[in-house]
Length: 165
Length: 72
Image (cartoon, rainbow over all chains, first blue to last red; front, side, top):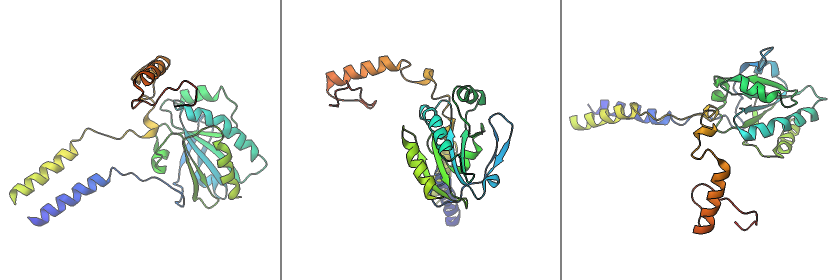
């Protein structure tokens, strides 16, 4: 009888612990991902980016700081335009990708934008705020996590990328 | 002993019937819509918060609306 109670208590605490989800942090290997671009033209996975420093940003059209950050990431992209070992990626998480397309059409963005309306990729990264961005080094390890966004934050991100080159 | 067992089982079943779930950050698109806010007019809300703050000399749990004097 005592054993049954023990098992029940353990399962109860296991159930409670399931509330605390994993969140990828500095030093962790970046989770693998694969998604189509917002326009559906191309599929990109993490294996395509091996040996490159990857900046990946999770955003949605309903998130005001995300909308502020996207044009500034274009400056980030252009500052590394001469290098083929730096990739800037944005992953859109809108349930309706058309909302993202409407916004993207208003701004000049040349970096790749992936669409993940089911939220599988942020789930695997354990994104806990919008927007959240990650700098991943050439060996696939997360080296910097940036949550939220305010004007000028791009310079911090740029400095983190430069450290890895 | 039976009482302890039944209490444990009841506790376990109650925890399973919980209707609460965590809304993930990327699932807040609907919640962020204007019609989902407590006050659909942000400007009117800012104004009334500022009046409340000035009259009561206390800010509620909604942030405070300053007058631009840098004194808040």
